[in-house]
Every structure is written in structure tokens, then in C-alpha cells.
Image (cartoon, rainbow, N blue to C red; front, top):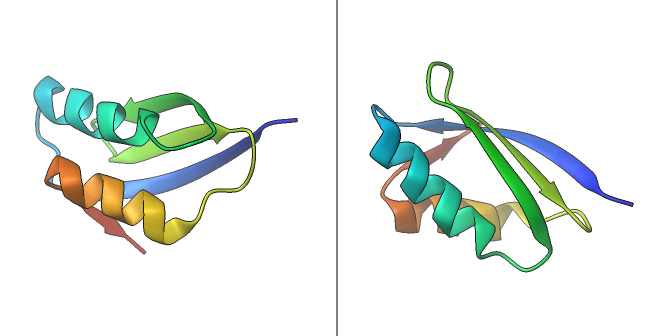
Length: 69
């Protein structure tokens, strides 16, 4: 079973931004896929189990961006 969760990330403006966010989120335990839509800031994370929002927020912050509500 896998879980898909959609988050919104602000501050991304280019392909490098997408790559940075994807890389950081992919390193979280249990994450199997990350899909980012630059135009909307929507980030769909597929994982084996539900992720801790604080961990997702920390990964996005590490990439240099902000998770929005």
C-alpha cells in the first residue's frame, strides 16, 4: 500500500528549485516518488506510510523553500 500526499511549496521559480525539493524529499524514509508542478507549487509525495508533516517541512526548508498550509 502506498500513500499519496499533496503539499504546496512556495518560492520555487525554476527547474533547479524543483530538483532541489525533489532531492530533499526523496531522501525521507519511505518515500518512493516525488512529483513537482512548478507552475502551482504542488508537490505530490508517494510513500509507503503517512509521513510526518514536520519531517516534510524540514526537508523542504533544507532545500531552501517553504511549505505552505
